[in-house]
Image 1 (tube, helix red, strand yellow):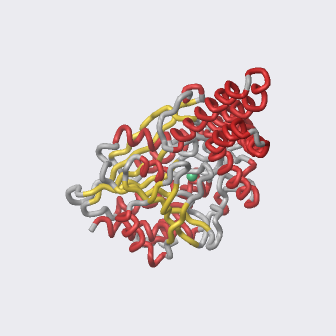
Image 2 (cartoon, protein in one colour):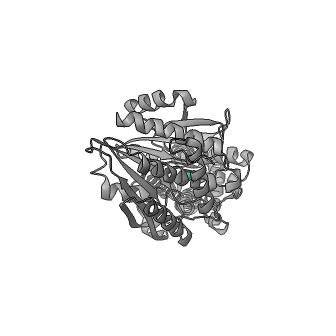
Image 3 (cartoon, rainbow, N blue to C red):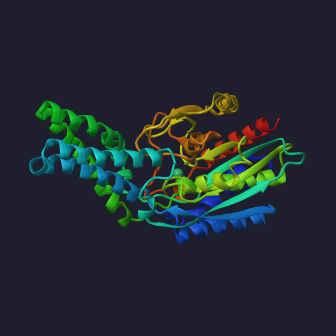
Length: 401
Ligand SMILES: [Zn+2]
């Protein structure tokens, strides 16, 4: 093996070996195995001789699926009120109950998808989670800061993610479920006002999707966690390998922060905890988030994302990544509003500068092994990890100028 400290292949191998150690089993949000992954990461950083390594504890949501069970359960209450209460109570009172349930459901979705506190949050199970945060100082004085972000936890391997066909069905159903909460309001109002049956049936069709969402929500946590090799041990390994290279070849004037976060999969509680404590220091920093960077022949950055509230990358950040990414064929993607999110999106919501990189196969909109039981380390590709190392290293050099 080539151990040249400027060779991306060497660091890609290092990233792979970390990912292999981390992805032996699932690392559910706010679980003991997530904590073990944090401890492994912390130990590796200390082995590198990085002085400033901290563990930041916080209380995180254990499952995004229970949140969906709550919101789509409320939507089902809305449907039930329209269909079951009109006869005993009359049209208007039934409609009011129905609209109240949909409004609360919609408000919860809006707050969650904009990464804000939401009503009834404390009714959902939370547990101890943690971020691992490290700081690598530059050779000279600190003129700017850059944060490398990788989440530690892995997702439940819910059946919706098992095949590409199911992922496409999930995407369509996800959009109908989320936007259907808001659509149900005018649909049932029109049903009552016009007495046209077509609106009532349209509402019933939405109820079918909300049942699907609720049922998935209450049953999702019965299954196993994905080993999460690509999502997101590939990223944790990549950032650890970058840390190793930075320790050997520090930047001139850029202070590098490493943020290994917990509870990303359940709604980015780790990133929110990080911003709460260090948001002031990192107000002008550039955050570089890595998501599924271990499989595929193509690299992309997220140009637009968000459920209910769409956000786009800052033009100055996009210009920088376009310039640096050109030799790597880096291209923009827009994530569909299916209920998925990244910590890059969380950062945009709070007005921070951020970019999120991921890898995939050319021409395919599906993220390889996303939330699957087959997301195991043997599927990771050194060539992809190598491209990520090289791209990020170039970005760091360019940013440091
Ligand atoms: Zn992820």
